[in-house]
Amino acid sequence: MTLVYILESTEFPDKHYVGLTTALEPRIKEHNAGRCFHTAKWRPWRGTVCAAFATRERAVQFERYLKSGSGRAFAKRHF
Image (cartoon, rainbow, N blue to C red; front, side):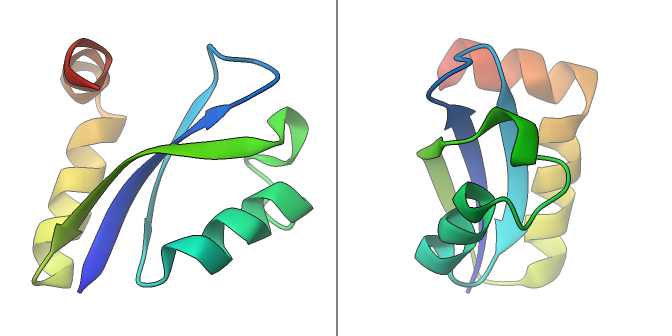
């Protein structure tokens, strides 16, 4: 099972991060520990959305969609 997740910065609520993992809790801990270059500036993070996919390929497709312009608009409207 592969997970696509959206994080929201607790200090900067307008900052969001979309990622992909197989273990959500350890991954969020890595983000909050500053081990991820892309999210270190805006920590701490909290999870807002998590979607599970049976195949990695489908998860990658959804993650790419959420990182696109229309995907960001979709996430803002629905999540």
